[in-house]
Length: 167
View (tube, rainbow, N blue to C red):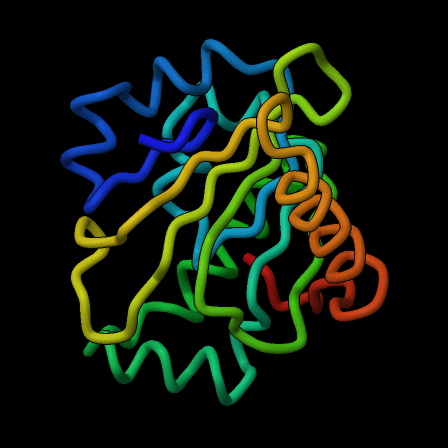
């Protein structure tokens, strides 16, 4: 293992290391970029940790294309429901101009032990089959900074306020 980096072949392996609830209990805050965010936002404790949430524009061709590759026509509905739930919980939400192909969150950006967690949402693969990587700022500050800078750029320059069609 590379120090400060953990690699998981899928969610089963990730959750064997630590459950979603354990992860959420251990962090104070996160900026998240999710594929639909449906599972995370409806997992209870996570909703209190998310400060900013990026989701793909549900009407973007790339988002629709990803849904077709996944044989899933619920993408738009899930993104809209997640948007509404996040807004109802005072989470700042923006829609990315396009689907980005991965989900990631920056955990505890301004705390003692920040890290970034990245999952690769591969078209055609079931959601549980996402390979994932967790990288610590302490041991890999450049990688961490790259993801923080990417998140901030996506938020500031490549996203917009959700439309009012969010349920």
